[in-house]
Image (tube, rainbow over all chains, first blue to last red; front, side):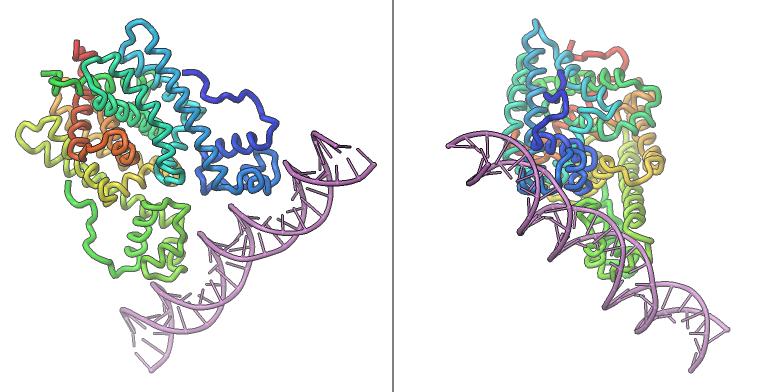
Length: 217
Length: 217
DNA sequence: TTCCGATTCAAACAGTTGTTTGAATGTGTA
DNA sequence: TACACATTCAAACAACTGTTTGAATCGGAA
């Protein structure tokens, strides 16, 4: 999965600078622990500029979130496209490409980790219109579900959607509780974590295939 | 899994009332969006009592969190004990008993849901000493890992621990994103969600068994 | 150069927050 | 009943917050 940010250096446009600073700080500290003064200090702007450009902190957050969400989903979408255009993609290939960059980034708290945290914060607090979020997410979910169906032709769309959620759950948990992993599973490398997750998810997804309730028996 | 709260009615002790109110509000609104005035209003106490009894909002939070964590883990622990003392417990039995009450409660936002949200908020913000959390959690993780080993004698402790985390991830995601489930999988009942999760998790766990990398082949 | 709209600025503002303070009240014991 | 400690109370405080305001500055076009 490629770089999820399309920006390579500090923007000249104050508006973009504010959005970047806001994203950085909201991801890290959450909405309430990030003040307008924090944001404008990091962006090199005057405090009144938040109201001037965005009509306030709340709208800044909304716009920042939407921008980030769209970028996330685009990055995932492109990964799926890339894997599915190879010859005979496997379920493990696809899962690995989706999961690895995220888990790897957790070691450095950058950049996927902070983005996932933003998404989880938003899920907890629900500041953004859910219909907007779901509307954007729909394309991604549909695309990934189709990818699962391509690889496992025996599953239907509904089942593939279930699989999308399960994959999401696995990834999210590892980001939030990485320290717990380290404590309870000492010496486990991020590569091992990825391998384990891919294995778990692949097996779980295959269990959804009709007539394979318990594949070990 | 039995009731996770051991309190049946409003306590007379102001200290307990404050803890209860704090728990209710911190779970729902998070630390920053819950003011001392909110808590004391709900508890029927004077605002200075938070400082008197707990030496401030922060310590109130710490104590509330610890109390809640211990109760959670105890409830889970007892569920595991109950299942493992039956004749020939299956993996599906155990997973169902752990997962069902939580998913079911998500429909009503009470009580497991709010507790899970508290745990996720804490993971994001890390206000409580991680060593304390991990220390408490250790007994539960060990116990559940042993349960997995009892049921699947071919897996070792390390593998069983991995399984613990995967189960946790599944549950957590469903609580946070229940609306997404409803949107993308219309008509899916909570019973179906539970069944699907149990199936996914059981299959995933079995994939960890040595020599069973891809059970569909 | 002037004008007009865009943008930035510093200061002010009202509201909220957790904490503090000293007085008032409550409780238990001698 | 008196006393000492525990507990509660109302008011005050300092700090922080997002927003507003009118002035100052900037930039582009005529």
